[in-house]
Length: 290
Image 1 (tube, rainbow, N blue to C red):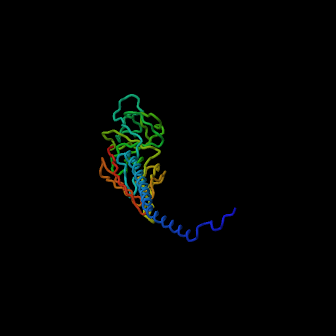
Image 2 (image 1 turned 60 degrees about the vertical axis):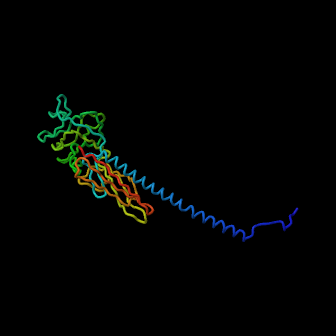
Image 3 (image 1 turned 30 degrees about the horizontal axis):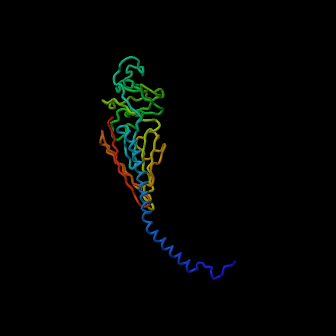
């Protein structure tokens, strides 16, 4: 049965336009009130991310530098270089007789006497040490500008490479590959030596190309390692590298080379994103007692 036409109803065009206008007004008002909290959340998340990146980079750098060979830290512009250590021990200073690792009169004691033949073997006082190919030992690093620890061949240097015969686990003797005697000035009361790992060698942290473009930093903080030993220092030495932070707009390293025993490396790192910057400052204690 058909309904009368007079009983059918619907929306007119005017009513639909009024509803759309009212809905738009309500949506606009809601957007105004929501925009500020949403923008605040985005800004907070960006600041937290920048802070986390800078903090992680500085913590990694501090952890590395606390293992540095004494007096091996050196700064060149916006890069800092050092020799990391993987182990260490004490060398014997007096011959006790019996079988000698070197098969000479100086035996298992390390000789610093320039009148003696070049001493390439000595006993470790204490627990055995594992040596791998490319490892280097440093004895008596007392020069605060970091030059001598990087010299593995020169007569005045205090670094020596472990010989192939000295590589292995649980070693009680150190065998070095050198034609140069350790200088007498490197013999110190502590009788200590540090082991620089062959898979790391010297390490450099370098800030590169840091400026601000369109509200973002363009620089990077990069860690370089396994490039050998350079004397003098090279700001960007090559080797293996890994990026620790980006969007850097400012970076500085301040180090007092005149403090021969304990010093501080002051690091400032600034990251800029979205025209907003976060700066972190950290002082890293450097123990220069050989």
